[in-house]
Length: 141
Image (tube, rainbow, N blue to C red; front, side, top):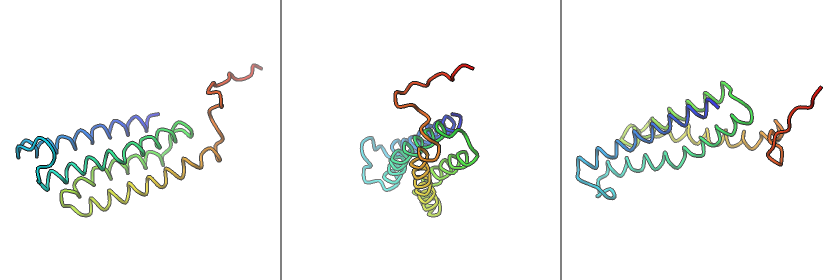
């Protein structure tokens, strides 16, 4: 599950980057709890919260789709688009409006596409996991 692993690792790094951005503002302004009325800090906190709201759903969808249907170029593209969107969004929250718009739009479109594809998989690929959760060995010849 290479795509899932790479995407989860990238998401961990993005979340750490977002946390460091918050920490810099907190230290610079001596704000250790809440946003202290600081607009920049509030925006950066919201950027990280927004990431945490969407990343788990996309990661779970990518992992389960990859598990059921295998790795594919389209899934790599979806994962890369999500990472790019989640990097663009915080810059948009800092004032680069196209970044926020693109980050939000791409995230929403990916949630929709991945969600619809995930819902369709059991009907198009069958159920790869037996009801008892045990994979039977292949019959001997």
